[in-house]
Length: 295
Figure (cartoon, rainbow, N blue to C red):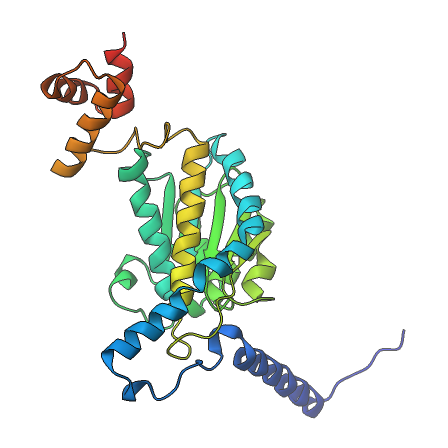
């Protein structure tokens, strides 16, 4: 094979061509495509709300097309979590916040340890409330953040990025996958770098946003719904739901205490409210209270 030396001018041209290709893909991506609506500032409040709602109605249909991808990812996560593995989310901006929200809701809803489902955001916890400049552009930081939790082969990692091109997520997924960790993602463009880095990609293409490029809208809604589906189905598969009840929920307020009492009395109708309350106080959860009441 004949070797070819490239001069500086040739390398410069190649680099410019590469950057133009990246820019073109950015401009053509679905999440960056122009809204179907224009002159938004001239619309009445009713028109704005109606049109936003009309766009939002399309999101569940987009998710429906991705159910086989979500199913494949969930099945693999369950296998690992039944062996003691954990579930991690990484993301930046809206995507990262959605991961943190979903992870933080699992302990009170299903009574699991706080370190079983972990949401990590580019820029750290401070970025939840206020954006941290350039945090998402570091492809090495996600792995540093993950290693702080001693992530290993039993764990699963889902990268969340509407655009599918966030360096923080791409780098984290790529390194984790090389380390033998199960990797998945939730993106809203097809053929993205994030999807290529993940073993089990979930691509939910929702089309142009009502406000052009504002992925906190339909894309964010799609990601939240997908996260709901993933964490809920995983927890059910792990035995954290009985019938259709959250029998391991944490009773952290009056509403949940009253719900727990009703659940216990539905299973043990001979008990009074006071007796059901006493069982819950002693045993700490609906599941344990019902089991104790049947002995």
